Amino acid sequence: MKRSEKRILLCLAHMSGNEMKYIQEAFATNWVVPLGPNVNGFEEDLAQFCSNGEKRVVALSAGTAAVHLALLACGVKAGDEVLVQSFTFCASANPVTYIGAKPVFVDSEKDTWNMDPELLEAAIIDRTEKTGQKPKAIVLVYLYGMPAKINEIVAVAKKYDIPLIEDAAEGLGSEYDGRVVGTFGQYGVLSFNGNKMITTSGGGALICPDDDAKGHIMYLATQARESYPYYQHTEIGFNYRMSNICAGIGRGQMTVLKEHIEHHRHIADIYREGFKDIDGITFHDETDDCMRSNFWLNTITLDEHLAVVGQEDVYQEMVKGAVGGAAGFVHESDNVHTDCEPNANVEAMRIFLDKANIESRPLWKPMHKQPVYKSSPAYTNGVSEELFRCGLCLPSGPCVTEEDARFIIAMVKEAIR
View 1 (tube, one colour):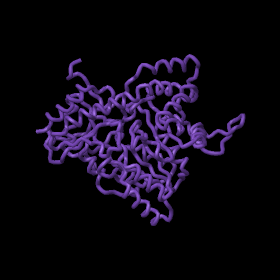
View 2: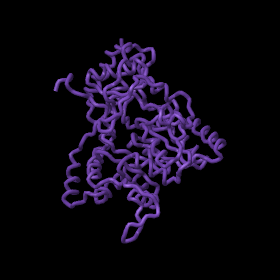
View 3: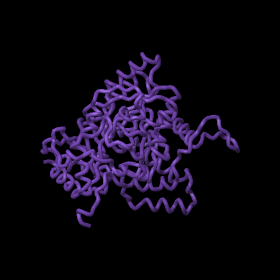
View 4: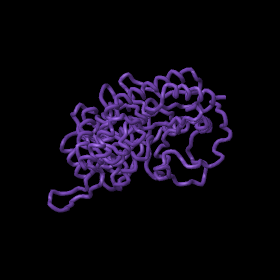
């Protein structure tokens, strides 16, 4: 395939070859429902990888389901407030509203781009004074796989006795001080969507502190059924368990997880070296020797004064379709502008790379700037808004080769005028 014909995707699942063995076993034994040997095996594999078996894991239908169940397990109810990192994908915040609770958004710090511990504490104090009660939970996110300032976050959570939920959907395999992220708080959320470090085609998991917590999560995830010879329910439950088929894919993927992490880190090395001498381009990197990111997505920021080919012509017409829509479906908008959008040079760079068959995307738009959450309280410092304006995600998946990464760097250089 010619370079001009190859589409370099942002992040794409890569099969190990072992997945089919587990899938075939599931069909051969007729275990195709949301239980069975693959589900049990996948949960055990994850527990061993994340915590050497000290924690427990429940395999679920989605990372979003994991966030939802973690909130319920932390006692969040309608009317409660939950502190959520603003700089994230909507799945970190939406489950708060499923419950009827209220998200309160907290901005990021400049080093890791994750929740600012000082701003978190200020938000706790202010919400307690304003409402007369503490927020019920904290949802921290490991953005693009980068470990947060987790010791400081944990200290604040413990000081005010508020449960911490770690959204490690993008952070599987990332570590802080030798410990896998998602294991510092009460619950840790994982995702196995098709673009994550490993995939089950879709799906997620919840890291739980012990057997009792796992049992409660499994109870809620299987429609909250009671122990009778008929269906009896005293609580509202959900159909959130992962199927034995999907778990089989996951078991196959676990055999290459460490390989995927090392590959992502190797691609990060190439980007880091390639961008270090380019004025106006900054590669987002680890800032602490204790950090070990999986570099799920490698990201760069563009100085606002950096001139990029075609930037004077961007935002002239609506994008046809959009990235990230479920099965390619998105609602068509009627205005090319919003009140917070990437700078013209960032959009021009995205378009330039797209014409070279390189998929790139803006960073996550902060939740406190999303119209659906315009009335939600937010404690901001301008960091996430500025990063959204100047940041870009680059292809980083296991299918991205060294040659691809160097080609992408060359195209970024070519786009600068």
